[in-house]
Image 1: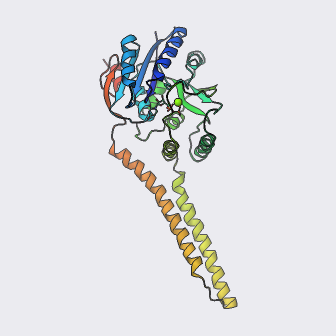
Image 2 (image 1 turned 45 degrees about the horizontal axis):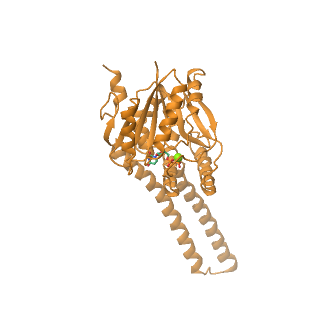
Length: 325
Ligand code: UDP
Ligand code: MG
């Protein structure tokens, strides 16, 4: 029997986990042709999430868990989850039931019957989300799709079922600054999209502030496009052109009308503006440099403090190693 693994990043989800578990058990009862493996990844929660996980593991041996030494972020949790699942298929799904578990059935059939490599979910409404946030989010995707080679579908969420082949492809991208939506798009493979309506989380509250989302969007842009680096060259050229024209005008004015150009305020403004542009461009360089700095330090993406998974210990290369006797 084939195994379908679920990777569930959890950060302070003590309230939603029991609901989530019940739903998954219900779906597993419908999808009886595969065996389920549920890997809960505790991303350094500050509440009783880990205790809830231990309880679920005691009750049901299909439930396994990994607990981080601190909060490493959802990206790290998804990576750790994919690293440690053993399934022939693996899905990433949120613990707050905002990713409807019923979709798993459709996703599974998309892979098994229609032979897609992955089936991903796409939100078609953004109800219940602040208007301003939806607006910025749309702008971000439009911008990213324009300036990078990867195509990220608007409304796509981190909810998808993949074959083992695609999971391994995703894992082969071992970058430290992870932007999973970009990684999914980058690895390619045949993806089917299923749509769903936004639902409110079942319990608890969102962990994403506007600022966190903003930093995450920078991760996406810097990780998947080098277009911002070109901005400096374009601006530099543009300013050269403008100054050349300005010099021409001043020389002509002096020669024709004998007009001694006056006015330090205009000069001060120009200096301010040009130095502003220079700083801005240096800032862009700095962003790339900073990411490179993080990559070269080669620190682990996550650290496990406690794990309860069937046949692997604290081994980040678990799946690959187990394949060899
Ligand atoms: N999450 C996580 N680490 C974090 C923040 C969030 O593992 O640092 C998990 C969280 O427990 C949930 C999923 O990522 O299962 C999505 O988070 P959330 O529901 O807060 O985001 P939203 O749905 O509001 O975008
Ligand atoms: Mg949520």
